[in-house]
Length: 162
Image (cartoon, rainbow, N blue to C red; front, side, top):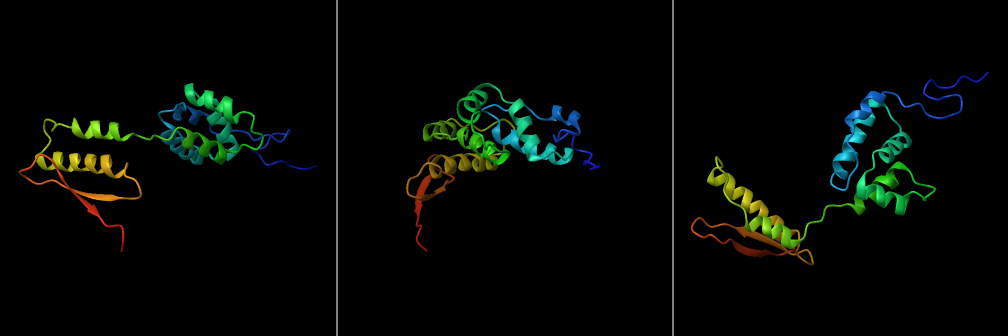
């Protein structure tokens, strides 16, 4: 007589332990892919879930555009595993912001109440860097310098050559 591991049923299927932890995992939407997979993997490690189990859980948590993408592109893939599923979802719903979005965020920034001038300058400098450096071609990099008496920043192209 062969004894099975306690986590395997007589028909060979894995038993999902710690099912109460499922409520800690949000639904998978097009707006939370990174958060979803991070949470699923963290909870999965606590619950000692296998990757096939996490794939099943992820499929059950699909909503909206992510469900539509899955049904149209991945549901018929026979060799889909957790890693391939995650990669396809994350790549398809990667949050890519346009230059106009980043520039609008930069140009509409205002100093918030209780925000020091120094904190505001650091925040707006970060927005300016994101606005420019995320959207430049050919790996160009600019240094953005804010002068105390000037509203507009000075831009200096940084050489990419050593």
